[in-house]
Image (tube, rainbow, N blue to C red; front, top):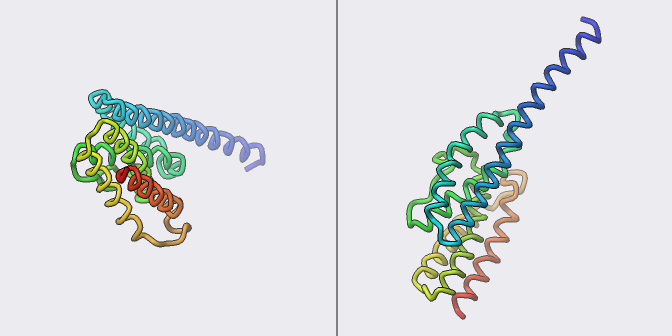
Length: 185
């Protein structure tokens, strides 16, 4: 095979890979934006709109999984994390069981990162409950923040194994302490 033929074959291969990467990036951005919309709807009291977006998210995440495949799974990590965050938040706000990584069809580290980020959204919900004078709701939310914190703090491994979880554990600790202070006021 001549060099020209080798380069031509590689050019075609890389072009196809680039198209697949672009599709995964585009789908990932869509999922991230829709997760943010769903969270905003939940915090502004528009649960029905949130559920419409979440229903779309379920199919969009499946499309992302297909687009990313194994070659571009790293591109989907942030989207999977956001997806885990909204799905866990909805479950807790509706007083249901937390989904598992396999329930969501995502990897464990993205799940843990999303669950950790959910604590910040629970704190925001707690603040809104306190502002509205809903002390029982605030106590429930604080209890769930502690529940996540207590469970995630058990995972004491190096960053090479748990990725960004170590940093997120510190963030959770701060969120819980701030929420404790807000509850006592």
